[in-house]
Amino acid sequence: MKRYLIPAGIVIALAAAVGIYRYTGNTPEATYKTTKVERGDIVSSVAATGNLTAVVTVQVGTQVSGTIQKLFVDFNSLVKKGQVIAQIDPALFNAQVEQTRGNYLSAQAGLEKAKADLVDAKRTLERNRQLLQGGIVAQGDFDTSETKYDQALAGIKSAEGSIAQTRGAYSQARTNLQNATIRSPVDGVVISRAIDVGQTVAASFQTPTLFTIAQDLTRMQIETSVDEADISRVRVGQPVSFTVDAYPEVKFKARVAQIRNAPVITQNVVTYVVIITVDNPELKLKPGMTANVGIEVGKRENVLMIPMAALRFKPQTEKEKTVRPASPAQGMGKRTASQQVYILSPENKPLPVKVQTGLGNDSQVEIVSETLKEGDEVIVQSTGSKEKQGMGGGGHSMRMRF
Image (tube, rainbow, N blue to C red; front, side, top):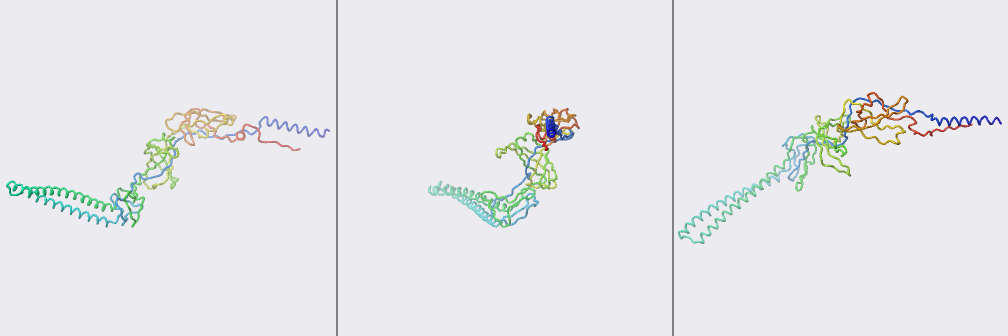
């Protein structure tokens, strides 16, 4: 009988030990990752994307139809204002000039003839008037000479109208001949050519585009779209930094030049166009490149700052009853916001500390209150098993075999 009582006593003692172990919560203590309060510069920016374009881009077309006879420039050609860049076959226009010139000269001759007829009719009319007074000619002959004089006056008007008409046609023909020679309207660089020799261009309804000329590629601009939530923080003159895929390691500098008031609505999303000017002295940047832009809307120098993760951290006991903290002030001159962070007590427990936050960005936020000082450590993350498992003690079981 005693042989069976000994193992039973051992089982009872072990079970009691397990119960005490669970009751007293002898689980590993929670540990925390901390970071120091630092002093430095903090910049808040608005992100956007856009495409690079020349500040002034001119599309060169033609006002006349015809066949391209010669091309004098190509892609990337440097051109001067007034330089000939293409020639449409001028044969037809030369013929029109000669024809209209002939009509114009004929109309001038017609005017001279009408003037001569007027002089003759006037002389005849005056002579018949004198003869009529002497009773030498009949009244009918005088009336006929008067009618011829009136007709000669009308002939003058008609000849003058013909001259105006033929002169206009002649001038138009000469203009068409001049337009057959395509010239550059500005100094710049040819960035697009849409024609080849032998190609026929028609200008009957809409002027076709033959060339696109960028006036000055050493100064370019970026046209970006800024969300309506951020547009209130963007100002003309603010500094801008951006990158392009061609030079991912280079940060280019620019400035906000214009904020357009017209809204752009795409799928119920409202944005506003912001124009950014860029100096391009080395011609690294090319039209059409995609720019990833950061518009600097606020900057603080030599201030205390902590990671944004410190504002998001909550101990396990607080996570269930706290709400998301307010965002820190994002722009220069905005009022501060009250926040709460945690530091470690001597017993390795999180202690809440009220702080006032100022300018912030995606990674850091400014501390404007005196509750923290440089070098203090704030909790940014919990790494202990208690925090991961929650407040319950379940998770491990003890199994014993006898």
